[in-house]
Length: 264
Image 1 (tube, rainbow, N blue to C red):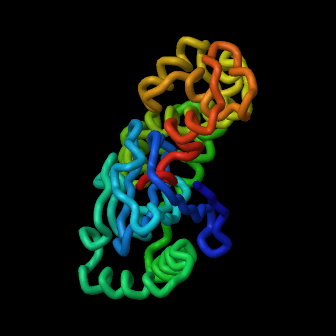
Image 2 (cartoon, rainbow, N blue to C red):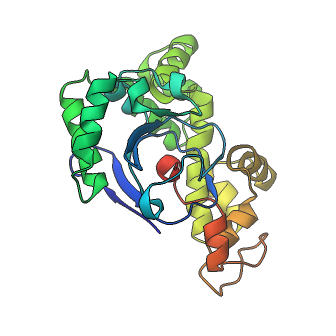
């Protein structure tokens, strides 16, 4: 079971939890997560490709809780550039003093809802940290809306090298990769709605259906048809171009809707 909710305490963040045996893949979403897993505090860095959902084993009942931060906002809170954590899952004690993390873990253990504890931890830390790079929000918003890297660079007033360096620190990778990841997320959302692949490609901003398929394979490790079939309502016909599917088993064995929210 997977569930999530917007955080009222941490702007732009999502609080989520997953229980049961992990299955499927964690897909790139441009985000970083703070995790509570079996009494441990961990950080999931920004991904450039699919990761197995069982990469970090859950605690009792397979419970994993997390706070997923909006793209570009986690590095200031964690005190480390995003590119240092790219495609990694690390102990929080590797980033913060171990005695502090041990005390935080003891405090977290007292929460009936670990997600609420993570949320308060993040809010408290944000209040004592430098603000995140304000440029990051504008860059992410522009790329999410489909603007080109050149157009985003012109709007924020940076040259290509400066934009690339700032993006590495904020997102973990350069603006072109971030744009691909955010475009993939648009395509995933459209595919889950059951739209035909040609329409998904057009509305998500791909050159054509073949371009969509190549990006799915590169970033998600699957095909658009297989992904859409896994999230089709039970008993429904698969979208055009995809195999029949939609069973509960298929849902468990394929990628979850959001990216590092399922990192566990």
